[in-house]
Image 1: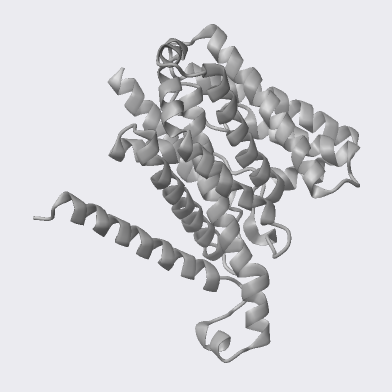
Image 2 (image 1 turned 90 degrees about the horizontal axis):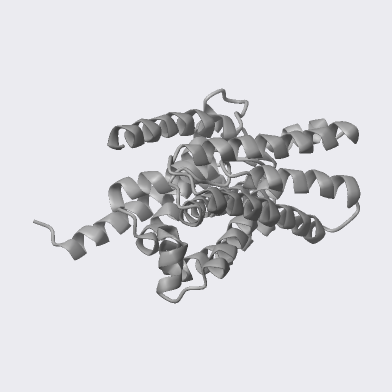
Length: 325
């Protein structure tokens, strides 16, 4: 019989091995054929593909997968609802609106300015929705994602109207379908903002868990509830804004990964957060590799594959929640 310490050590080793295997597949699977032999022999074309495309793409996948999954976990704590996520509370739609506004009115500005606009729209839009939930206090857990999706559709309609008005529909459509094929060295580095954001999220994990119990409980144990909610929304907005700006919209990820981890590990946020980030990376890596080989030599956008899998998991979670009610 394995003791508990050995069990967890084995789990970590298996997790590391799985990540290395999938990372290797991500580096060597694709229409451009590269292999270890050509890299060792110093083939300049293989090295160029590896360092300018495959490695940046792998890093972007890891950062986006971990970032959106952690953002979903935080949203579920802040909204006190297991079906909350950036894609079901309007955060992603607000980020898209900010992206369109930055293209229209700040087309010549730097990427930092564009990111600031997207971030501002994400924070304001998410705070409006969170405040709305706190005011009405829904008892039915399914009402939160339904209302969030309707709220997001209103924001999305406004973004679409502006895109039509300024002839940016094609640009907007391209960004609503996430695809890592356009990630190259020099155009993905904003995603590294996910690293400090996730570290801050881990630092405040206990406070987010307390806030998820309710405002009264948080205040009774001496927490500034409004401050904790604001910190959570800011972290979510940073993660959502960077992913939308660099990659596009990845649906369901922030919803299903935290719920699947919670099914096996419980609801301790501090313990779950690293595993949520890990499984977010694994899910995006798997879907990305599948997207590269399923209609080879063409590539299917990752958002389509995650939508199919995420939709099935979401239905399962809804049915499970209904059976437990």
